[in-house]
Image (cartoon, rainbow, N blue to C red):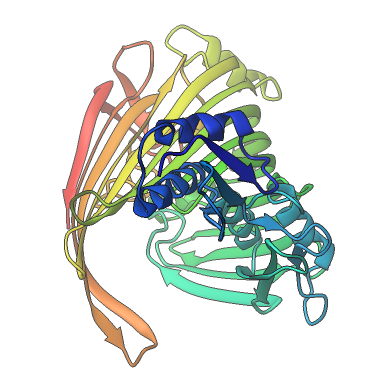
Length: 475
């Protein structure tokens, strides 16, 4: 038969009728078989599916086509206009309207469903601490509509953890015990309270205690989340410096905003901004050596990607730009030393860029390879609290935390991981081999200078090191 005109039927909102008619015009005014007529309808379906309307369908109803007019019915797969989204109303701490608002923000009643919108809504719900979300699609109350039933499961409101490690400093205690509590959704508003304490038991006169309190909560239905964190660390230096009675403390208050610009199963692109206020004090023999304040404003972007290349893997890219001010004026002698000839000149404003790249590559079901590179670039000499560090469990692992810090630096690691199996379905065990490397420039002025190890008293434990140097380790 020869088609003279295609007549579109259905509630069409995702595309204009002219766009669909233009697509079908390729099948006009030429002889078509029944299979070719079906191909015309399938072309409309593909257009919808390519744009993410995964439930949309175009089909040919039973009809008389002898006059050259062919009817194509388009069902866009819309949410029921009255009861399109349903969430549990009982048995949960989370207030039901919060989950409902999140899903309605991405998928409105009476509108065609797109896969990326449903993914975003469910992933935003899963980002709420202690919450797991999924969804089922059901027939709606009217023909051609659908109903989304959201399933929510909550973890225990109160969770705890404890761990021990040997990542502490030699002068404040190598062995550390960490305990923490998580309180999820106690108020029913997607919030989380956190408490973490780390203690290094007294060792040769040195000790350390750390406390961190945190709070976070969603704002609105778009995925925006705010956080507040307070931390307090206090330490006493021991070993050969025990007689100096060297001790110090540092407090930090941070507020943060995070917003997911893109949220899908394969891609997450997040923007964040933070402001922090730090207060740091050191004294020896009951004489205050330093009393510093740092105000820091930061903004950054984070990208996470998963792919199927060479067996599949994941990528992370992060960049953070920070600007702040350092105030040394509370101890005139400290300020004078900083500003004197040969001093570090850290007083005042500063800027820095922090960045990281990471790739986790799947080699086999048991074997994976991780590659990581991160670094920092600063506008001037920085206070020790803002400097880039090479040593420690998150850096060059053959050296203690705080070893080798500089204004500018870069470090990388190559790590092979082998998952050997599970023990009685309770714990996993495996093997790792790594190579770590890092390089710093101690101060931006370019001159060689004594570089203090951060875990040592700066007035007594310096060793003349070149301005730029590297560390590496294998394990």
